[in-house]
Length: 220
Image (cartoon, rainbow, N blue to C red; front, side, top):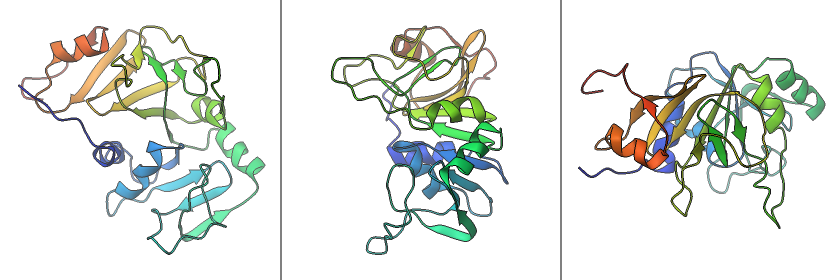
């Protein structure tokens, strides 16, 4: 059976559906910023950016950008009623003090037990860019990763052990990818869901690691 990968927006929508009402959430640079555009109606989520914003809204409409109001990735954002901006030292105090419920980060690699590598590949010529990732990975109550499952060369970004410089140890709780959603546990990967048509055996072959599916009933 054939299967279709989730588009970036479909993946952002999948992440957004798991964010609970009232959560304080940081969205990392890149794909995670798309989650802001897919938060369900009627759910209040307070979005944080480490450059000093609390209460971000969705991306502005074309032509309505205000480049004095940007997120940590230098993208223009909107501010919801009651939102605020402040010194980035205060913002990092929020992150390090455990005041964020969830952070959603991109990654180069994630281990099956939740180790995260997302700031450098360590390769010659690579430009390291850690930003606030280390503070977020260990400071947020839950760290989620949002990424493509495979590299452009077809290798899995979920690995038994990270070979790139680490951002944090055993900090990732969930991995959201274009093909499947996983939980990281001390015992390894646990499948949450996969795109229609992608079987467990084929998914294990793509990842190259055992994936626990015992909790899923037929049809899930």
